[in-house]
Length: 448
Image 1 (cartoon, one colour):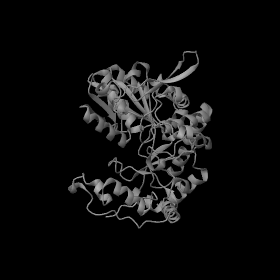
Image 2: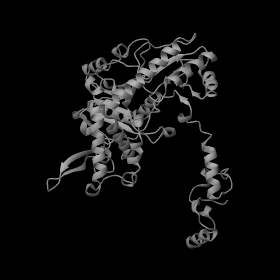
Image 3: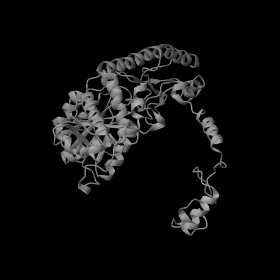
Image 4: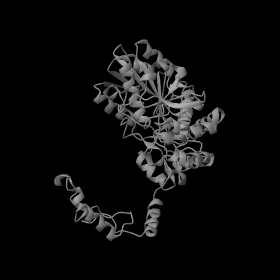
């Protein structure tokens, strides 16, 4: 079997390398891999192409992707289509940022260290917390890591997680907890409020309560009331938030949260078919030394000049080893930089205006859909820019029909929540115009 590469080596080049290694074929490079776990037949790849031909082929494949720019997208559920100002790409694409790695040597890393310090400062201000780390892998890992912090800080091994938290986040939490022998109990609010549902589950064995704000269905729970309940039994409160919503809603830190995490994709990062994303994590000061990853601090050098260093980095590949707070040993620096530029560009006024547009446009669409016979709303709590609709037909049927009209009609909830059969989660951002929303309502009404 021949192995092809896009690196333009000639046959003579390959022969020379094999001769130098004393091999007759590239397959011999893999001789140490047991035969029973090796691929039995070659990959069904097309014949090698010239570079110009390959580029045409890839462009033809790319146009088959129906992206959010060419549709009216009502998809959300954790990945959000927001406008990214051109200044974000202009800065993060600079070579000194784009190619930078872990800033171990502060004397040559001041630019990246300062950018990270500014990111931490903005995250702390946005979430209402005392301190933030230099970021995590994504929102789901930040959420799970926060659960471990609760267990370590309280020396307890039970976590309560609301079923209204993103299903993927709950699965990642369960995976983390299993390895740490931590018990995770899901609390289903049902028709009750979340504080009511937590009432019977909270006791002195609970290390942490983990909720989402707004929750997975876009609804706004009573975070202050939940914080009071958790603290009454000595538990910590983790709030997973949607950063854009914090331009309008009260910051979780000012409502009593001990840890705030988030998916930072909505802050200047594209959806990119699922990643790379940005895990946001912030905490009260008493939990500072339990934060995973790293924290950049501000200091002065020997001549009194302002400087930045990695102040805390309790990581397993340093001296702490098995006593490390986490096995996550890096951070999403470039994504965090994009969030920093985005937040700097928007400012408090811009963030509020952005949040208000999301809120009002979502409520406008909800009011339009509410006038269509057969369309109902199974939930009645206040919501931000996502809401649940129940349809008189299956969501899959409606999605397929509206896709023909260039409309991505939300997220089918029946897979993650069987009790929400024929229900879709719809999201509206600032990128949908009134005409877009009117068109969605008209097409859905005509279909039903």
